[in-house]
Image (tube, rainbow, N blue to C red; front, side, top):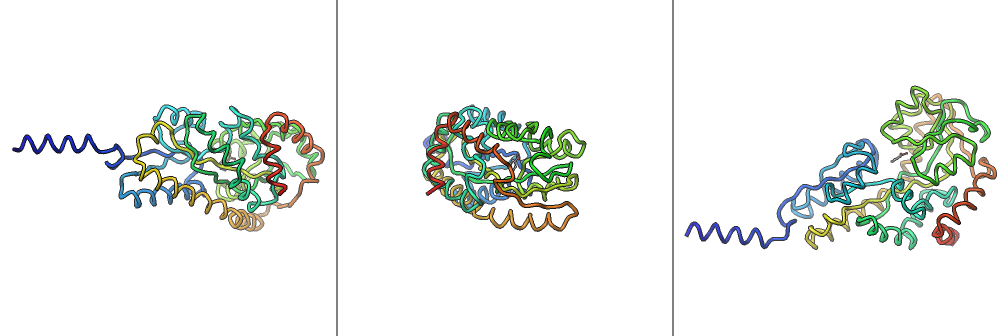
Length: 320
Ligand code: BEZ
């Protein structure tokens, strides 16, 4: 009788879809624990665990603990990790259409960025994540990009020849080259030390990171240019996704989509709050607009409309 009971228990376990049993999943991202991406990921993981009654337990690995984004993308493709929050770098370097969100002054502010990130071009790009072996859950962002420099910068001419840290990301490199600067790609976790020891003269970065990671400690100019939005893609491993029960997939989808939208909406306030904090430091904070950059922006658009045909679609959406 005992043996029959054991046999039946074994059969029941075999018949259960994988994710009906509690399972741990790994979510990797490059931002440090205080950053909003990590905060939103933590909240999403807690809610998913609760709503799936513990069946889907997502563990977080911030600050690039699972590797840089190129390494994490590979791990997602092989199924060695499960979820990630990514900048656009790895996607744009494989398909230039993923770089179009970085078009300078495409939108004025976070509210404009939110509209585009919920629009049809953004949705197409999310669906096309399947070509990378990924499932796209939605778009987040890290607010609008600003410029922080060690040397004082008043005019765009002062940026000439300066080593400006960027993401290794063709549309960003093109923008800084058009300005006559020397774009210097560098992963986020290496940036504080590189700026402190003068390996780079400045950076384009988010307002939040400038305050939280204290880049301002080594700066003599903070330029609130808001010149680009900075999207984030929340993705999962296509391979692992297949093994998760449909009911749990629906919960993961819904929670990520809602948390990402809350994040995007929140960045209006986050950027304003950290800008106010930066204004309490000794570093001059200047606000500039598109004209400050001169003809480099038009040059950028001419080049990228050819390289990334979906840019034209996105511009049409932005102009609506
Ligand atoms: C950056 O590399 O500049 C960055 C990445 C993620 C969030 C914010 C900034």
